[in-house]
Image (cartoon, rainbow, N blue to C red):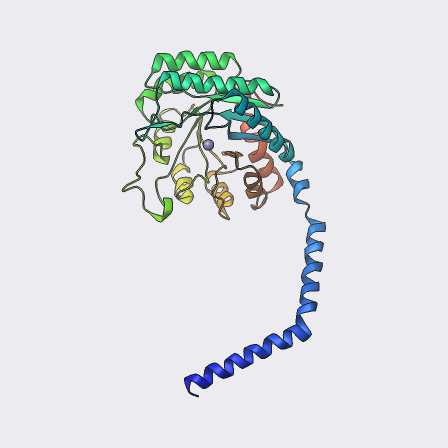
Length: 324
Ligand SMILES: [Zn+2]
């Protein structure tokens, strides 16, 4: 068969297939698909599953780009609306200083006091639902210690830091010791620096030098086995398999499940590497996805309860701040 004849005959047989399917096959196939979809919907009511599990959101922000109280108040109502629809009982709010000055995050004392004041203001709007994490920069040790006291006295329950200073930096040591005394967790923004955008970023992360990577958490957790550390967002971008493997043998490092990257098996893999007691539900303000990825994973009932609520509540319980 020459080339022209081959295309002519395959073209015809393909056309024949379409005709015969439209005459005899398609309608019954559509009906079968509709029947199985409705049968599935009857078996699995996703919102019923969502509401079945009370949740604590261990990683959620107020409006990060705003300092106007009216805008924060509006944003807080949006948060409560999502929380009600997803059965999130408690939201651990934070506002790390993310403003960059010439590519470096603002590390000033004024900035962290100002950001904590915003959290304190928002907490008062719904004290039964909102709690907060204070931010600081440990290179300003005295001011950071004063700020921790001020924020704890007003009801905050943990720390949240960005990349002003690496979590493994010696400047953190006295703060970690203080947090051990308070029995509170330190939640730090983290990135693997591998795999972002398909690059092996370890060679050129194009990030400020002080971004905490998994190895920094391993180092500080080893130095302070009584400390509690929260590695932010497994879905924050980058190589999450690498991250889980790196943290595998650091039992006092917890990982929150938030982030906008929600690949399949992410939670299953984290569970396999880190165990069911070290994963904390978090949204990072990706509300539906954050809940959906837990429900879509192969977790049993007790593991879902731990991740959605109990693991973080047990952390809060150590300092007497548990929900119930
Ligand atoms: Zn975040």
